[in-house]
Image (tube, rainbow, N blue to C red):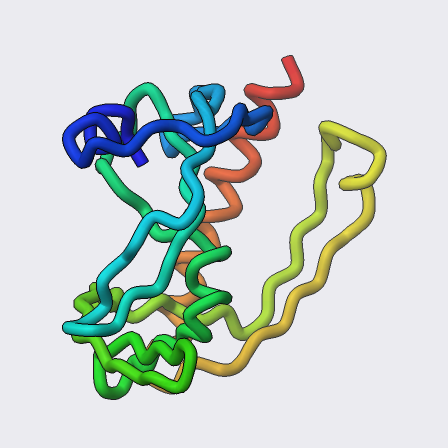
Length: 162
């Protein structure tokens, strides 16, 4: 929870925190403290308390963590696009939204690569990878993609080597 939201809600820190958080951009931030039993209202007459860490600043004011999801026995149902929770003989189903990747990821059928100038000793042997066969992709298209990937990998390896 952000310090700004805690202040707006009139919540004060109950205990010190020794937790260091790694933010999405890689920066680290020390928690200011912990607030116990913050009421999270799931639906009318259903409150599931939460212990929250307070941060000086956050990209979003409040993030429900794994500790609350475990306490709420939360289950994400992707088919019904809902979050199902259960707490003290009460149940709720909350609508959620999420994005699914629309692009189909190409599958590799077979691929062998030999490193001529290995960056490390672990990469000095030939590698062989086999995945499911992709029915929609022609062999010629596949070979062009693999040729491009091989050149790209070799170029990066050479740049890192020098």
